[in-house]
Length: 244
Image (cartoon, rainbow, N blue to C red; front, side, top):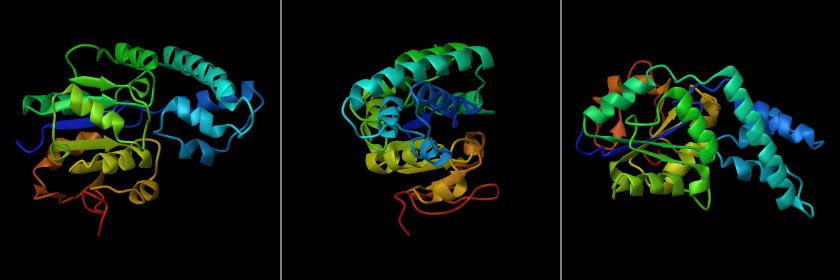
């Protein structure tokens, strides 16, 4: 595994079970301010910076930025309450995958559109605060969230990884995959365990689609040259940069 130096995983829907808390919190926060959104609108902002997502969901009118900040604070409060009352659960196999990668000398980073306070809440509930991963990069650590590549670049910086061709990016949304493409990672993996469907992920640049991250160790031996040769249980489509 010498060529692979870093794996950057998304949080909700990829390494943490997504039980609908994020769209529920968005809907509740917007409703408090007399706004409604469709399921499609919510789906389109999944994977993005949550602060930017709130801004994008608001009509373009005077005071939009200030209103977005108020609604974003409400979103954070709703999401925090949901996580505290409903609990937080890891995706099956997540911890084992982290341990397996790190045993191979591969660094592991988490990146997310959540701000640092919500991320701390999640990591504390999961008992992932110390010694589980090598870096955690949050939405408020970067000037621009996905599809910009900055979350991945910050993860590389935090883990002393200098070459994107030694990086794997893993996420459950199209924006995760676009961010990986924009960062120039060698392996850009979509998982079907979260927010977006197979069709949505297939429309984004990717190396391969996995049912979940649990199969990653099982299929790592399938890596040949720059292409993951997907076997049974995987959905084969595209190349490392989403080209035919």
